[in-house]
Amino acid sequence: MAGKKKSINAGVIVAIIVAIVLGTNIFSRDQNHSGSAPTTAEQNSHHQLQDQIVAGDKQQFEQNQSSSLLAGDAKIQQAFLDRRSDVQVEGVGVVKTVLADDQQGSRHQRFILELGNGMTVLVAHNIDLSPRLEKLSKGDTVQFFGEYEYNTQGGVIHWTHRDPQGRHIDGWLKYKGNIYQ
Image 1: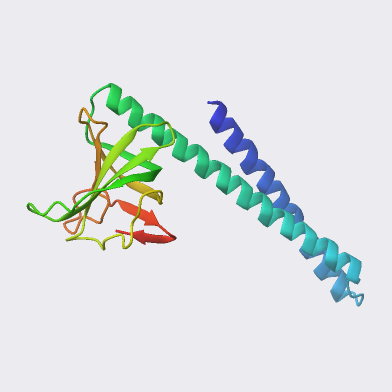
Image 2: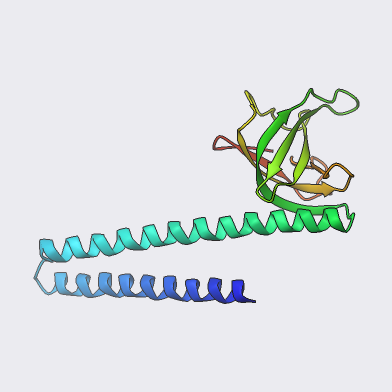
């Protein structure tokens, strides 16, 4: 509940700032039509306010994303403790080990990620349906959205691709700024 309050409060603050900027623009436009051009100081002040809004939105986005990823770690940890599978999860981890591809059935690129909470999970990324993460190395950061399956070693993340038959939610991997699905 506290997280929702913070999101709502942040949303209200952003809405108020946007309203102020829009009001400033309308007021400035009305002044311009009356024949007086905005001064350089007014223009600079307006641009500074816009820059602050953009910086604030970016900071809020990064905070929300970080909170979401931490919640993903907790969701995976709880699924592991409850021995649950078929859990849709999102998170980020650091590559601990790059494994050989699984060549049986559909081919899968495999690697082990260490999550922020210290857990490790195997990622099995279907490379018959999605591009391979090229030059993946130990220490690289990979963000994911897929399905968690319980096993005693920590679990497996799979369905990190689009479902060509449209029966399963699409997953993805994000690596070095590129999205693989």
